[in-house]
Image (cartoon, rainbow, N blue to C red; front, side):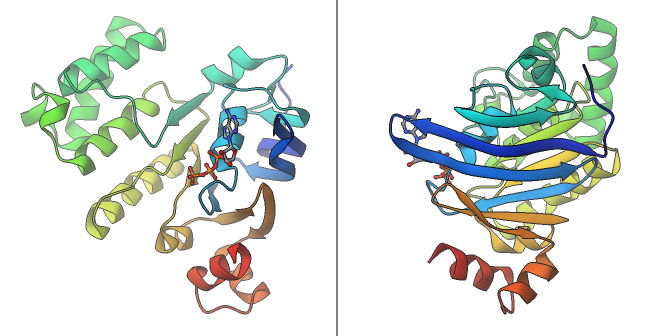
Length: 243
Ligand code: ATP
């Protein structure tokens, strides 16, 4: 049954083991409705492992995990219906056009043809991609592909969107542009759960969690974390935790 709470994600004592290796070591945290929540950590810290559990793609070894009011053990299908997910290797079809990709993802979510058609038009307008709607994805710059991948991840108006390193490999202006889309998404009421290795992006989040070797070692607003770790910027906070 769906719970009524201000937390859109509730995680208590989450453990995920692969054999004897502990990838998520007793994680406890909440994410508030509408928040932009940064989920940081060095390579291999356990971020993707946790995101897969939060998205209903993999089961925890133990612990309580509630996403959008649904239990990830018993209500996985409901979790999946209420979330969007954009992975590092985002899943656009390179040999389909922009429009065909949008149509395809709308179809996956079981949306009506009328809704998909109307939403596709407004999306192409918003992305200013009307002129390239019939171009193949593979012909586009990486930054444009990232924007399209983000747009299809929220096409079905989920309650939460998980972005796993959405801006890898593009220049700072393109990244900044992408963050404008994140702000718009959050303003529209969708909670944004984002991982990044760029510390300037950590500063844009409402709250940030920093993981090291499977554990959360810091969780607060960027301002409070800088105070707590006696650091001038998030780079310094990160280095102090991950060293
Ligand atoms: P990155 O920033 O590189 O994406 P990450 O923080 O997302 O790193 P994870 O991908 O969650 O890290 O991996 C955490 C650890 O768990 C790594 O040591 C990884 O090798 C291990 N791991 C992940 N998936 C599996 C699996 N299916 N079987 C065994 N070990 C795994």
